Image 1 (cartoon, rainbow, N blue to C red):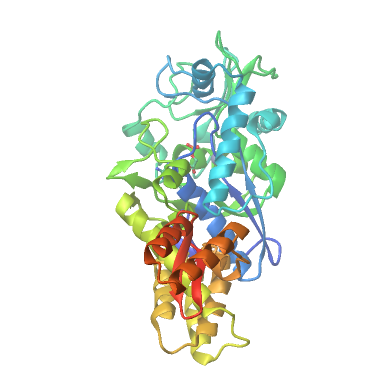
Image 2 (image 1 turned 180 degrees about the vertical axis):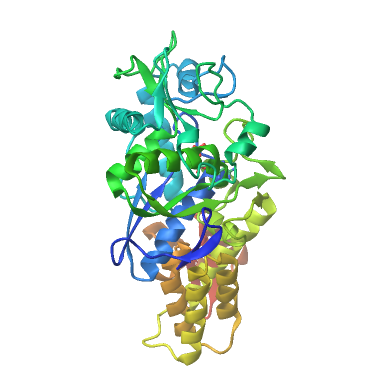
Length: 463
Ligand code: AMP
Ligand code: ZN
């Protein structure tokens, strides 16, 4: 598999540090608000990389952090409020309860859109000692300094290559720099906090060698990624907004601490927008998984929708496109049911389609191209039904659309349905069409599709 590496701005072959075993870190959710479809599009990217690599035969270990330390509403202003604290005040729950509530919700939402669980979900609050240790190492190595208030800052000028991920070089930063963290004690306005002293009223705080405080946002991902994946790992993912400052600062921290490159490939996903507006937790313009369900679409169809756009591009969410994706996925499942069972073996034309699908996935997750291959297979007269079934069933390891759902559903009508079917067939033989229609409606209201066949009434589950 080749992936676009934000750091080198090139497509690069995934070559894991350990033969056959890829290690990946995905920046996870902040858990003081619900996750929206944009967040899920980005989490789906990490899962899709993993599915694609496993499809190629790799073993993949994926770590996703949970950001349960509160960070600032606006790092630029001195009056900034801790977002976790705001949620605590709004909801009357403790920080731990808030984090648990929203972490559970994001796990449910992720499962609903077919994101498979990561191997581990380390929480920031459970790794403060590791963050303190990393901060101490950076002080010892001359990359960080303590100021009188008890805050610790990373000295950006001490790290060659700061800005190489985002293109925000120090000169750039100086010119158009918006003060990221206003503290007159900082040596340079571009320096960022590794540790902040706790002001009055701060809820989440810990003891440290520099006094009571709390970690900066970026340091959790350096500490936890290296703790669980070692100081050289293969892939790091996140949304495009995380390139700067979050990932730029993570590189400076991790590499500053160990003295060599840590992450091989940085992958960033484009944002999801709703009618041209960025969906974000702070603007409140968000769509969530439960709204998809209320709307009557299968949340897995959101996957098909996202496959229409390359992961690096921004993408617009519209309900029309969502409905179309839902219809398409349901149609694919129906066709699979018609095509079953799987072919014992597949011929040369089917192998060609398979090679094209695999190549699309391997080419930096070109899912729009993979979708074209799926559509061609559905429409072609070149393949047997069994071959079509075999191909789509195997590709579903990447697509994650539960395409075999109908075909493999062992379904039988309930006793009540069976009784009504018998009554309806009797009414039909007696040419009592009013009664037969009434029974048809009753059956339909039980969630089944009613079909008239030469053998009498048959029912099957409706989507
Ligand atoms: P957060 O919970 O806000 O820390 O975000 C979790 C992930 O979602 C991060 O990787 C963000 O970059 C990503 N993200 C935030 N907003 C969007 C969006 N509108 N579209 C796609 N990804 C997003
Ligand atoms: Zn992160």
